Image (cartoon, rainbow, N blue to C red; front, side, top):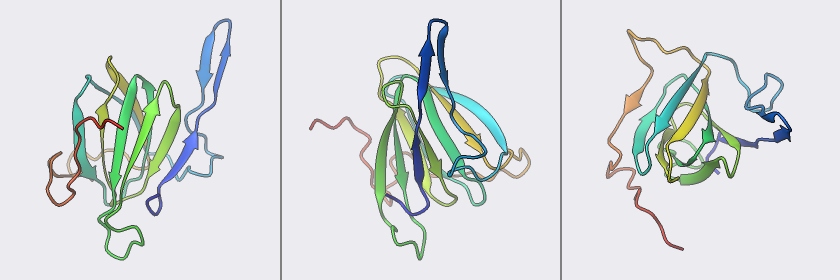
Length: 151
């Protein structure tokens, strides 16, 4: 586990009308504050990485398809500095992952169909001064291999 990262398995409540799944509640242990909610999609095999925020925490859940969410801790003074962690989440593993500031994150759609990701952030997006800092998906300092692994 990376310092400050927390996860919550999500409960799906099905009935004859369909399903309900709560993603984040203000009484959850992982809840900090509300900034905004957005949705993003990924086509199969597409990588969206890397970025981090100075102030913002993210709460990422995949509600359609599957993603491999990868986190990397570059923070000076962190007990988990240099640690990289993978999470597989989506339809077959409903989960929300709380990502604190300064932790690099990105994901890859690993399902055969488009994935749909919901992110509940702790800050609103500032169009004039975005709190978003990027580096390439294949950044050598992080050194993560996004290719499919066969176990």
